Image (cartoon, rainbow, N blue to C red; front, side, top):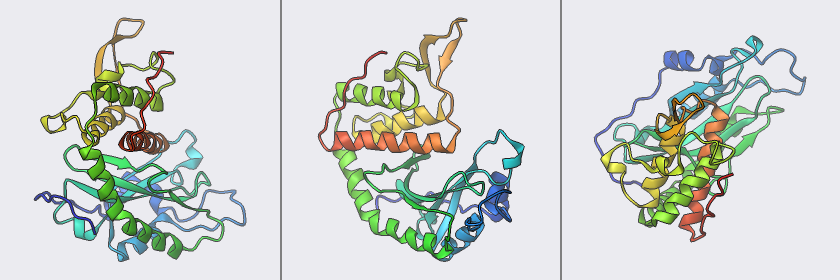
Length: 280
């Protein structure tokens, strides 16, 4: 397995009690009522048990907010898992397995490749171009299929290291940084004008270690500012109040934005210029 520079930071696996508190839908005892007879109920908790036997440990979990009370306990949930050997000494970045599922027929089982960057606690998700998400329909699903599919990510780990090295060695010009920020804004907002901040604001570093001009550092700055929110500049609303980027909450929204942003970074790493976005 590819190993990067080490640190003394230790990661902790989530306990069952914490998982039940953060995402109770993981432990659903059955599917939502009214599902098709072809629907095969495989609780996420059973998949987690199988992954744990293969040394994948949960480190983060969340579930989708609901609008209808009938979906409570069955809604979409996301779990990020990390290899057991990475828990004692967490590196500057670590590959993660991102598991998405629901028990309300809202989505199939999904396995995505993720990256956790310790310095900013960023949870990135690789684009489909780098690692195509693995999906399983609930009809006729066997738990072993999902667990076995996790090994594809292990085989992909060395390539992740190569990709990050390319990002770290690719220095961006000011125009390239601006184009990346502009295109990143459009991953979340309909236009640059409708965004609460100027694209340049997303390039601001929250800490000294993130002030580099390389692609890896830049894409992490933009990702953190777009997803965690809290950044603002001179833009104000109609009432004169200062506007700011709100934290992104939806599971699908975060996964899709992460994938889109990673895809933009790959374009730059491959020498493909990004177009400057129009204001409208």
